[in-house]
Length: 320
Image 1: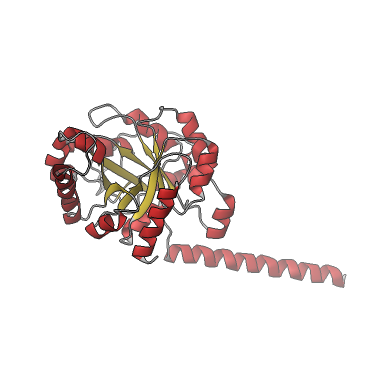
Image 2 (image 1 turned 90 degrees about the vertical axis):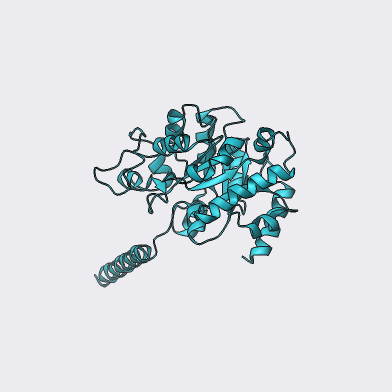
């Protein structure tokens, strides 16, 4: 009988301890809510985010990248096949349960963002819907040349909003359905619907909408383009831009650099994170200039030696 009472007492103590810990954790998260999208968190803290482009959607590459010190990966479906099944396998291969348990929340250390294949002038709603429905935390859209194209991109990324919502426009066009995304994010469907919106248009949104500036026309329209609500970041494509300006593959030509600086200046003036590719030799220069979204040169097989070295130089420069 005494043994039974002692056992019940122990169970009660365990119950109250777990309940107290749970309430403390919930309370702490309410006071210090975490971001699901680490890149957005870094931007809000005024810090740059580092990543790379990956065409290799093998599970092994997903594991290597997810365990790296990078902040994000651009899963490239512009210059690699549009294959939604291999993309979903890549996403699921990035999941690390040990990391989630250690962190205490489902925020991935390396954020998966998809570069869709459609250019700004092409229809892209179905592509965006499919990558978001499977759990992507953002999209990067190539060749956005006009504010109209930027607005269409933002609309495709948003669910239709409540009537009279302050952030109703640009009006959302994303189709709604039960999707695997909430499960991948580690939240409920109602929570997902609330969070799956374009930041910073929706300050609590967790989706990052990135436009690529890759043409002479885009540079000329940059101020009007970044005035479109819902643009979370701008990424300059130096290679395509060099072709558009008449200096094929010569990304260091002065007119190309001048065009990139014009885009950067416009973004800095409106506090919009601006991105570019970089390596160990020019990473400090780009950080000093104010670039906040760095994609290291190098593609498949996980972070290359150049990527690792570039990241080391950047962290050392930033002292964190």
